[in-house]
Amino acid sequence: MSFGRSCVVSLVILGAMASCAAGGAKMGTAGVASPSSMVAPGEPTSVQIPEQLVIEGSVFVEVTEVGDLVAGLRQEVEGAGGRVITEEVSGGETSWSATLKLRLPPDKVDHVVDWLAKRGDITDKRINATDVSRQLFDQELALENLQATSDRLQALLAQPGMVMNDILAIEKELTRIRGEIEAIKGSQRFLADRVSLATLDVSLRRRDGAVHIARAKFYPGVRFTTLTLIDPEGRQRTRVGGSLVMHTVMRNHSLELDLFQAEPDAAGGAAKAAVIATTGGAAYSDFLGGGRRQVLNPYLGGRLGYAYLDSSRFVIQAEAGLELYKSRHVVVDASVRGTGMLGKKTDTAVVAGTGVVVAF
Image (tube, rainbow, N blue to C red; front, side, top):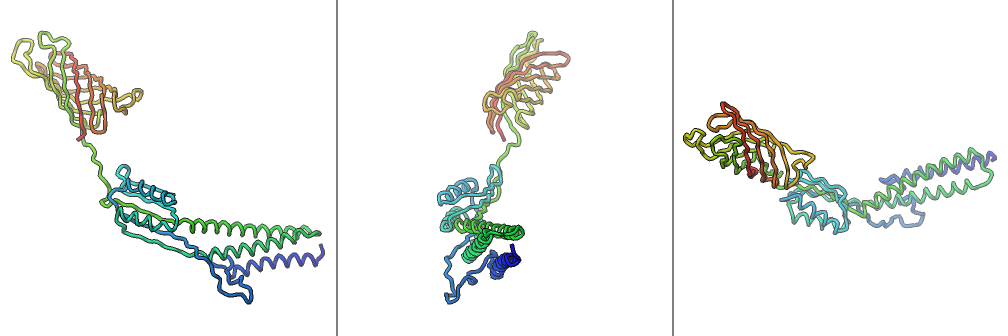
């Protein structure tokens, strides 16, 4: 290529850059050419641009219960043609606070705010509408300018006899222009989405603060029990009685007091009641459900304590039991305990019982 052609190429590229720079000197908030720069001589200087509003807002609401309202709000938003894009509920089962980000058709924002106002007290509301029509219009004009420049450079590149340096210079400028075009198109898509759907942040708070769920401090209960001596030696073999039970943590530890009917001793002395007071606990097997079933949870345990049967004794028990029914507030179970009563005289016995424990 001759020196003259190289100068022409350079002048075309410089002209393209100057055109973009001149447009940039009249850019709006999005960094694109303003409409006034595109008005031809003799044409009216005012341009009628349709209004394009970006609606954003936030609402703080105090309600009686949060959990039910969140589900209802989601249904209301979806019925209005919007969607919930983020949802956070705090407080676990208490559900005493929630924050949601909603995308709604612009004409449905007031409808959703009114729906919330009927179900709680709006303590703060902020709704802003920003007109971005000028920004969108400027972007469209900037795209037209960049595309026209790109077309001129493409036409120049198609001319025969171009030297490598000129080709590289034109390709570099085309790459820059394509980048600007893609950036403006991305900004246009973002603005168009914000115009088509309003954004509303909703914060829900329970009017009386967090809900305090009742939690059991201990678990009292009663049992029907029988004491059966393995070798009664002239005494009554089986005695019927009852127990008072106090579980501190369900199944893991308990205090129990068993009282059995009075019977005479082997020598025929005055009838005396038998007493067994023990402390101990039991555990579940992970291979047998781990105590998580509502019915039929087996367990094994051990107990130590004091017994009076004709005389004071040290007592040790090995226990096997089955929870017949279990819920959060009540447990019904049956157990058998192999019992050794050690003292001046040693007795072995079986203590069987069925009882109920409730949360307090």
